[in-house]
Image (cartoon, rainbow, N blue to C red; front, side, top):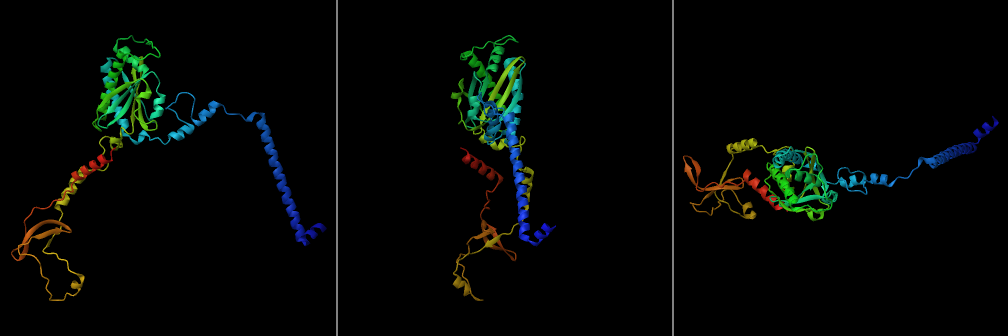
Length: 385
């Protein structure tokens, strides 16, 4: 009690005791934290820590030492490829290639005289260099030209479909795996048969694009080495379409690659959500507007004479002053609507009213819908590369 009374009487001593207590509490907490760290480090030494393997590091980064896979991207590769333009921004492509699948199913059945089923595997956006490096060899690559678009595309037929087509066209037996001589080039007969197959595919592709744009595809050359089939820069984006062709117990894939530069002339059409979309263009409204404009009433002015006088002279005018008109009696009078001169005529009188007899045809402006459409076409032609 005496000690407490002394502390209460001495405020400085009370503050010193409180500071010592706080310091002791902080020291105890710090010691507990150090002890926890020691325990965690000891448990890590017992086996909780482990080093990532090279395979796990590759999966984390999205890269692998094997062949490049265009189907699945993850890690840093997914972040890098996220800048690619997605084909979903061109929704009309799905409709075009779905139509191609239906046309190609019938055409290949007539071409092979066999039961052929064609399906759309996938539509993706890839870089041209990545796709060329991922082509499994052996394969036949056909470089074709789109004449109206003034650019090129690439069609790839894998080895499985090549040998399946050769077996079907040359009467090979069913259910037998055709022997493949690795490393040998394709013969002239095999190349000609594959070329006929690609011509069938391109002919159907023309019909699939016909509702959107008139285009003619023609084979420029056939290559077996992807390095010789370069139609674009490696970093340029392109649309990759994979078609699966099944002939009962055999088949393969056909891949169509269209760089974005190739389909740029019809990009506005591919942005449509459905076939024939006009984005707000309403011909009924246009017809109604033209009718209402033709029935509208406007005010016109007959300008007899115009003159420019100095402001000093204008300020000196008084009541009773006369302004001489420097014009002849048979001078033409301009008929205006606002600042636009419509026509000219001669002044006269009809009954008790002053009238203007029109002597020239009305100057019709060329602001029609057809003029705007032609202006848009000229603008697109000048902007096109």
